[in-house]
Image (cartoon, rainbow, N blue to C red; front, side, top):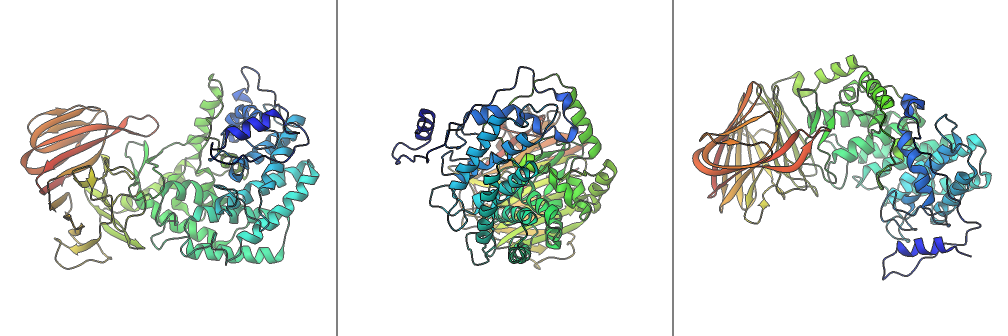
Length: 623
């Protein structure tokens, strides 16, 4: 008989209009797990590299005790929709397996019979979702999904490895072996258009399945599938990497999925199968990354050129990223790709952060629901070799915009242009052509070698992009903006790449507006001609110590909103003043938004907005 706990939880997770899905009979109710006693765990008991397990330990009992009797992880702890047919919800089988198998002074659940029973039930439910062809569903029961099958391969293979090491659940081990073989057969088939497109639609999801297959084939070698995996590594290198250097995500680039998911999945695969294509892919992406992460001179970390990102909105990376860090496994490629060290936490800084964590008297709290990614744990299984401070400093010095103060780099893919212009006093970025999903086109950032990031447009936000904005808050950046590039002023001899012109011109626009830009050593001139009244919108990154002054003498307050009638605006940061001049006195406003940057939240987004009648001439003078 189904328990009342099973029926109530299953019904609660379904839409009212949907037919009720009743799981198959369970042999016994899933027993509860005893919560940790007050004051546990003791931070001092954790080895530094295992501190990442502490919040998961605090979350384990609440998560297990929310399971229903079928083995479904109810409670909404991981992935949505939180419904019994979503195989991704079940990925925490690895978490249960690890805590059951690994004796530590801080782990009271090692060998716990109730935890093993919960794991048995969770695996039973997980495996019951697999289709006969080997795939798993996510968004509906009949879906044959890329992500649930790809990531499932990794979690199920890692769970099988744990079970074999301890000898636990021998019947489930046999079922896992068979399930993995079926999933690999489906996933590695080059004719499977759910997994393989040209170019790939979601490269991170395809990479996850290859990483899982690499481990599964270590556990159970299969010559035919091994050949298919070798072919798949070559195929993902050909179809998953843009000519611009990024990994394909939803018809474009996405910083979060590229740097925090895709690259670590390639690293995971490399630990089980050191295929050279994986290093080539890491090197290509690191080259792209080096133009798009903007180093702050005060050591806060990196601002992200996020405007082109197509799926998510990661806006910065802190200088020191203590556990949990979704990019941690990227250390795998640092030896072959030394430039990647620039974007990793230095081992000395990480050691200090971990020592501070261990010494803290604050209790370890459980994770927030949905913020429980098991990848944090699985990517800590391969040891770690973070770069030293010296290695990292050498890599930082080799970043293209720090190594040189004069270049123009144009990278293209699928009708999208990624432009990077370095002059002695500035570094300017642009994203032109076709717009990918949540991206925002046009000029995207302005960086100064002493002041750091001055302007940084956001994606998926019409109030925070560098744009000509029409009534109704309709920016030209929220759509395609084809561009042409010139030696000197726009309209002259066209530039299509190669050595940087002394002055670089850009002309871009749509049916409603044309914008001409001229970039010289220390100035950017931006001339706008629109077919109606509009507003110049400039997304500033402001420090609390910056001095903000309109040319009429009006001081603008950090974190507030200030309006003045003036022909310009100055932002002074330390020894550097950035001057914005538009020639004619106009009513202009600088206003803070809610977006903050870095862990301390001190830097803050402010928008400078200047309404005009359709013609606007802006000169930005740096330094």
